[in-house]
Length: 136
Picture 1 (cartoon, rainbow, N blue to C red):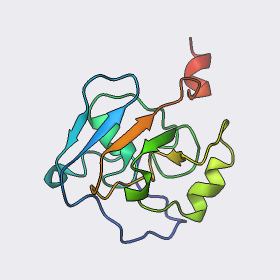
Picture 2: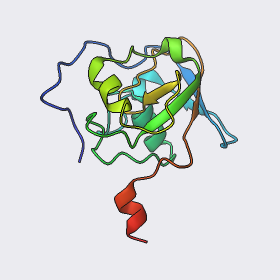
Picture 3: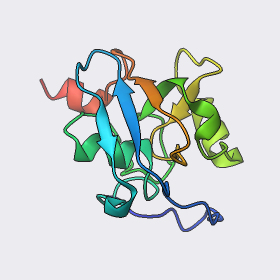
């Protein structure tokens, strides 16, 4: 599943226009993002952290397919948050359902960096898709 939530107003903010890096806590090598390659996939907004992370092999749960209908892709943007698209009301409402919120909390599917600075992301270890966990 993936795509766009038809009940939400879409903004014009697109993916980054300049190269930048994404560092993921616990991952040695930073991700080099080339704007001409964005978007990579179909999950989350084009050029979102979810799109970038999934394309580079970083697993991020996203039960709704990245259409801001759950909070399983909750991440902490530790650095570079000011260069990301501002959280809209739908994202803020969905974040209210996520545990352990901080001022750095974002939904990876909605957080679109503009490329003006390096991004540092932490994926909470407890942030798992409950259905997936129950399968094991």
